[in-house]
Length: 505
Image (cartoon, helix red, strand yellow):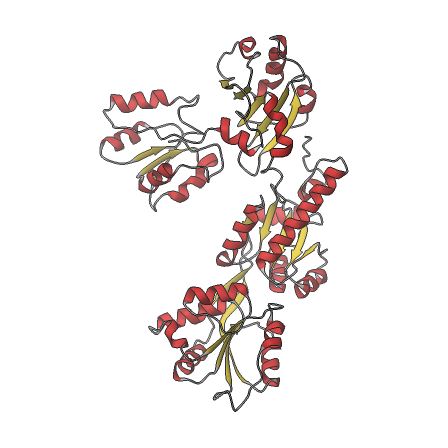
């Protein structure tokens, strides 16, 4: 089965289906380990080429999937493995994959067969008569040739190809490690001298390379290749990491906070009982974690969203509202302005004994929540039951390589979504390096970051994780554009540190 060119998402539906049913998967784990997410729990993993034991297992009725680079019918050695299956009288299927010859070029912004009469693919690992390829009228794509790129260019020139012919060399194709050098056959030696190109790579020769400047879409993403630290809980990180990936970033989730039940659950038990028996007029949720805590208590007592009937529900912002809607509860009040306790108070109605039969509000919150909301509601005439629904405690320190990357400038950016994430990250891993871009969700988080001696580079225009990621992307796009306008090569923040490897394009 073809595993595609590198991007784990460039897998066929047939491939995903077979991986989900596989008993044994044979693959290069370092390169294609991400594809194992399609597999069921307990699948047996084998490394390297197809082992004889896997063939015997298939003969006994097991489903064995052998993952091959790109497309298994492109310059691979599967004929020997197929022969082994035939000899053992084992049924086999060959599942095509997305080949690098088309995918890497597409990700590099090079249309291989647009307005050209021919598209030719050759394998430099096999002996080639380069003079026969020199007169290819269209696009020439070369596999396994990066080590011999300069001799190949000279051979093509010697065979009659003009030394001004555009050429591109792209390695790490379709991944956030993709790196492309654009040159000509005559200048390739000088342009590759300090590029550090390694396999897997493809060499593209022909006029189609000239279209890259206006068709490049992948390597020009605002945060392309940026390694971004997301210091949140695993559950909170999913949507944010997905958004960062859409900007070309490589998000790494490092939990700094662990959410745990309250030490004394009796307070929450009484609150849930009061909620069901009509003790409250309002319930105010200031976080998705508070929604989760109440939902878990409901499930413990066999209750569901119907228990909110007759209650008014307030939500501090979009993320909390989504958690409520997932629970089956549509909030009655969400701030239209600032999504914070202050924003909620600005729109909260004062208590009116003629309109409100009950003057009590339930606030299920974290143990470290501020008193802003309670004080404001009290001023408006409401009585508040401020209940600890969950505790936030500092998470365990991340592995040593992560700590070293944080302090040594290995991360391009860090996103801080609260003051506690600042305090906890510094506490468990140390201060981020001065080249690392610091992005914060709002003024209070910025103040805390500055108290720890951090330079704040980016602040969200509204207090939401989505807005924070968008602000970082805008920062990255502006930096890239400024470098291009100055005639410089755009570089990631981590490449600014002393001793960082610098590639020349």
